[in-house]
Length: 311
Image (cartoon, one colour):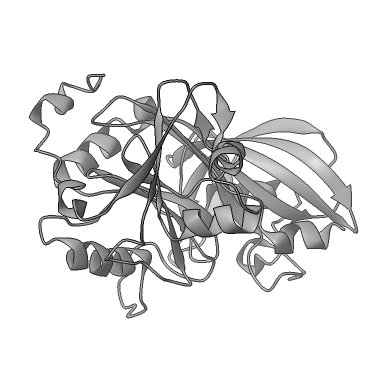
């Protein structure tokens, strides 16, 4: 499918990403009917769920010649699932970053809490971009990593990176058209009054880098957050959040506005820290591939420490 964004797909360089893996051998499993990847592999490869997850974690599973680590990926008839005979030569290990999806143009990763997405002025701490830069340079100097969007230091979850500057430019300039859904899960203090709702305000930042909210247009950036309460227990609420806009600290400020700050977020009003971190996780990311035009959907499980709080 051609790229719908300004004809970018017409200028695609030759994809030699898999040519360099010619030494790998594969066992092919054609997809005959719709299925979930975990179920499909269990039927055709056999073994326990632990074994299947190990294949995924070792990046030995390919769907239509693209590595996948998502056990819940939905398969369609006509696709091809392949199992490599060994792990990739350029293995990737990091306790801060997990690669969820990779092709010659983009990377989707899951970031841990406690690491910056990008370097900030005056900070010398390792970032997600640093880790990915090192990874792609080991594979080929033809690739580089370019940041498309960010998550706060204390927030975990899904991030999208580009491997080419022009792809990064396409993604940032057409973000609203390309990205169809971004959702977060949060543990908030107290019992949410409403089962669902939406909050709109204008956000500004003071000299201490604290973002503050105004119900009226004060020259700041308009921010819209939709929320749905999933559970209330033990003095906390499990809340799903969907963004209409992506402003700095938007969710954190809006939950403070609702008088239900995110647990562990002392900067924005939290009085408790039950998980030793800010309880905010970006669990879903849906977008149209900027080159192929394919619909891409990624989802991660809720962090265990979140669900433990509400047991």
